[in-house]
Length: 103
Image (cartoon, rainbow, N blue to C red; front, side, top):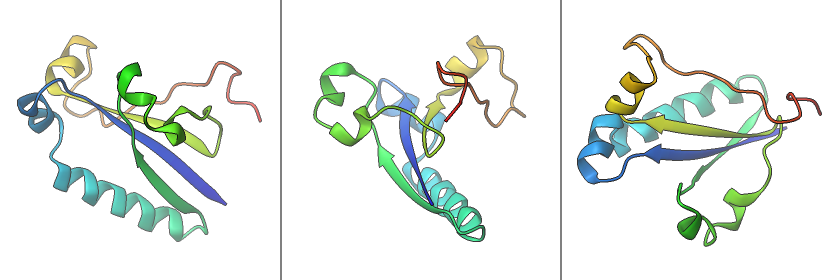
């Protein structure tokens, strides 16, 4: 089985990106997640997906519908996390797809 993760960063400039996560940290996190998944026999594929529709049209793999084997990961910059009421100890959240996550 393979899980594909579309990764997007909610940052509008370089400073916000650095506040959210550095490219090195993101790469380390992807490697660690891949290592954990591989121990269970699941392969991972990481796609760097843009957020704006005008950019997204150039990345057809990022346009495919989400499914249990295709997930979206959004990295938020600190100010956005604070506006959403997330604490420093919140590492993420999960949302169900429109069909309730059913296959």
